[in-house]
Image (tube, rainbow, N blue to C red; front, top):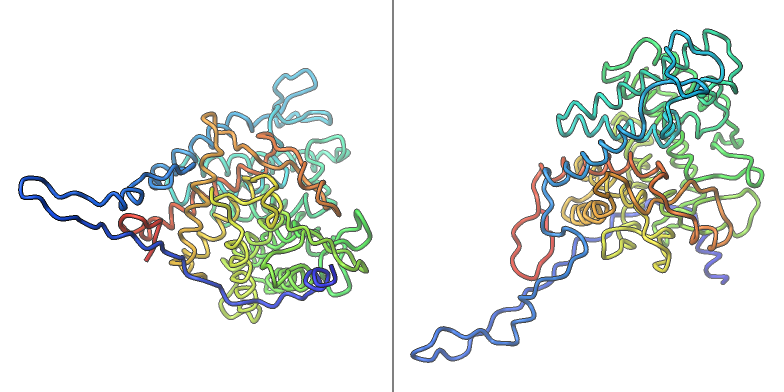
Length: 460
């Protein structure tokens, strides 16, 4: 126990990416003596190597077209289940020009939640990679719509808690601000935003940059469930928005803050021996609860690639963030299951396989490969296998299955083991679109080579 406690308290030191993919050595067919009047006989000892593996995922049949087919099912589902429009308390449609307190969005997924901020970012990337305007239109239409709703209520001076956009008018936590701000800024930078988007961006960034509780060194923190608690989730609920604001405005202070969060969270929460992050850190607790929750690690790795994507090449913090990304990717690769998916608790294979985290890792690894940050030969097979596993969790109707519902921090394993899974947990839809789009881009750079019998997916 003492050794374990020491391990969980170790400060993360960025480490070198670990390994190249291992290749199985194909057996050599042996031929017996050739009778004068008969064809060659294959040695029966070679027969097992010719058997077809019973892969539980489409291991040998992954193409950009096949990936887009899965993504299109997801798009169809979220178009149906996240409609645009406002209704009154009788369910009748309401014109935006006549909004009053008590009006709500049409029934469906919440259009302003952090999960849907990720979905808008995923749809934008999917449109960019595939060239299919339906994805781009999906994101732009909904971002502009919610910005219009917020602007109408703001102008009317409605009581914020009587509106469906309280988290836009008066954000009071990182969950309200981070993912949505990143999506809105991406729409703004793409030239797709209406006039109400930019003022909303400023509201979100004011909360992140100036009003969220912080530790004395500037690390973003929460006051629950215990005073001065770090939630690993908050790397995504802050860093992409800060990074995108830096790209939008050119102000270095946003980049500086984003880098600070990655490095100071990592100093406290990254366990170098495992290459994984703890879900939470509590000031004064000893030891800290070392539960390596899958989706929290997903938020962290995605935050790093989103930051590196826009961080100036000459920023002094860039080498440390890149080294941290490599260390984390190496740790994640070690605990991938044979199905391509990862477990709810990453280092506990008796916990269930979880889809949203797996999709996040597929996206982050593929993007890091495509940007040249990690070794394509070592990690492209892992990213591709991750997508192959994720693809089996998208139903014919486009629902993303086996997604853990929203989760706070826990201090015992049962909390994580028994969190429910639901297709209505919105956390899965954006990551699947992000993963599919980035893996398509990765395959366009060259798919697996024809490596012969007995070998897996091998990339040059």
